Image 1 (cartoon, rainbow, N blue to C red):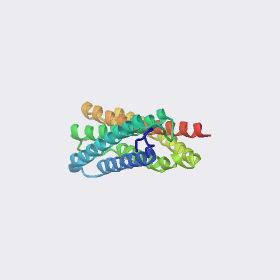
Image 2 (cartoon, rainbow, N blue to C red):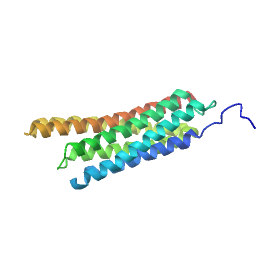
Image 3 (cartoon, helix red, strand yellow):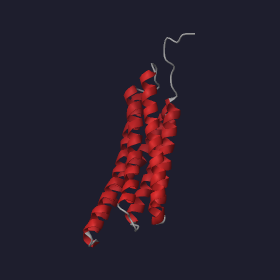
Image 4 (tube, rainbow, N blue to C red):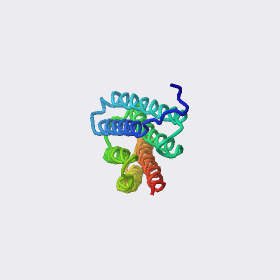
Length: 206
């Protein structure tokens, strides 16, 4: 039988898979920040593989979106949600790459704390995304927590950079860690962008 209309794709399943990859990347990043420096390259490679998976999923979602006539959400929201989750994964990968390229040989408490915040933000996204096609009001609780985590990360980052300028005597080390802190904080910013898209979806369904 010839199809007149393309079939509706299961975007909710694809979003769940993408959020799971994001959470796994955040988990490996925290392992990198807390674990031995000798394992940084291995963790960075694991994150790079997850980043490639995330890119493939984003491409798959956009391809399916372009061939689907009927979608469960507004087309722009599907595109935005996938793209913003991919942004978080990209910044996790950017952090891991810097840890390896900068040949980091020490641990910084603020780096660990920011990685923990990223993991918590990823967990909120994983918890929120399944409600897209169900009880969308439940999404707002997770959005509130994502907003709170963004403020927490901003505070930790500003404090960490101020401490760097006060205490660090090696300018190269200062530059390296300042950049790492800023990329970590940017990842949480992008997680809040995911929250903004989710809130838009809820408002449109109200």
